[in-house]
Image (cartoon, rainbow, N blue to C red; front, side):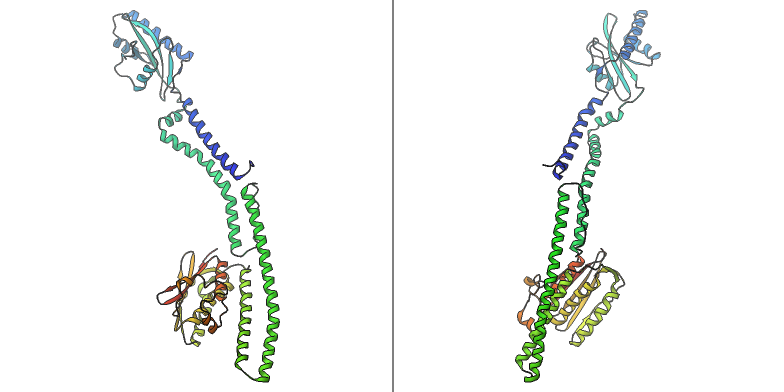
Length: 446
């Protein structure tokens, strides 16, 4: 396994993050100054000083009670003094909870301890005698500096500590996500351009030396192979077209000469019809190939400027066939299309609708923020539901006898579908009521 592989990066980042969080959770309690700790020499000197002071006070006033001693001490002392018996019972009437806890934790005068809280520092005890009874002295002084207050506050609020840990870990996770997704976004942008037919798109140079780098190289090789295959296909279609058209031209010429000598017959009419169909099929095959290899750039054009002439021509053609063609008022909204491909796709669908309609063809346009959808409906024979997805296949005939009557080559809908795929759009058919509807959805922008 390589250390610069994607697996190693994810695995290493995961365990690094876990290790940092565990280390923080282990070390933070040790940074809490509120833990019991050995008393320092300066604090021990302070404790002994208070002990001597209280001892002298008791020696001068042996009849004073413990409460009186505490009142005298509080008048001329910046320290707070607390007295307990050997069992930890406090003499003071009012004692903070944290001092009471410290008294319970530290009751050996032979081993005085110290505890630092946010605002106060406690240390003690020391032993004195009062009225022939042993007492323990504890001292509380204000903190001059609130060290590590944030640490103590976090330890007192576990949920906030967890939230802080999550916030601290976010930059690591964000960097890892960015490191992994940035090259993937570049590959995605390049693959979208390839999907739209731009096979000259160079894939980005990714120097991470991991699986993503190998993926980029593989995709580049795939696109190069695809480009070569399509070029070979185009060359093959061109060669076939040339080879077929030469004998086809001679056949049509021979047919014309025969008709001139022998006159018009049903057999010659049939031969002429099939020759024309073959010529049409070759032309449509070349059109399909050109669409697949189309590499022009999109243009911004208003909807009415692009569609008006197309719909007027369709209306004229429908009227010539004794049918009606209706379309809505066109807006000036801008659409981003390949004009030639879009024109060919819409024209093929409209001609198909005119061919199979009984009386009328109608167009509706739905303009949205990101898409524009043209729906072309006709009142012709409905398409079986099981065949709605098959009609866009090349050379597919829904009804062989109907195609013979109309002379279709079976490539018109396939050409329209390929044109829509070039746009990054889609085309589909359905039966709405008593009409067959073809929907062409274009993305309005890149």
